Image 1 (cartoon, rainbow, N blue to C red):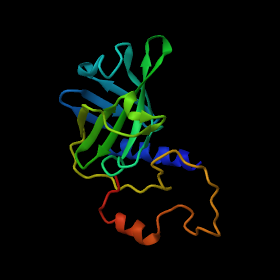
Image 2: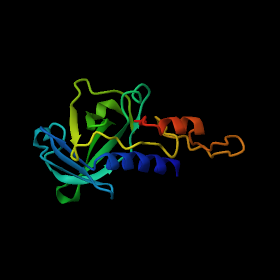
Image 3: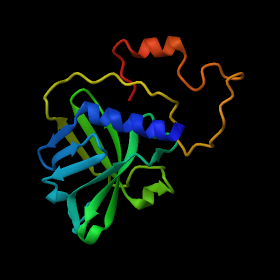
Image 4: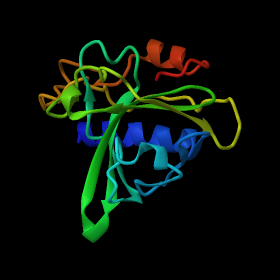
Length: 184
């Protein structure tokens, strides 16, 4: 349940910041509210990053975690499961950060993963910056509804008697972050 809430919060933030992001070199990435994406104009990434048989749409899955030392630089990680010819799902992994003007993604090769945890950047990272299509510089304030583990959760059962906050930020930290400081 907490993991589902974590993934939904991360996805919702990417969607609300966009949902349309534009790169001069790498096309237009549109994130849809139903969890799907469309990415047109990404030919410069084929086949080095995106498989040649990938179509321009698929599912954005917040299945990845950031390893130690990665959470200071990145907001999170995700997999784009591209729809492929014959119904295949073709995964391409990214780490990302968001700022007031857009969305920065960085390709994560399989050698940078330990299971579902991104443990390091690529040796020669491919960084793609998308500007927000609406042209605004006002980030949507972000608050996680549950704490975000940087590695797969241990699935502990919350003990309300022991932890009165039940996993939410204390009121003082919550109020501080709502005064213009985005947590990403």
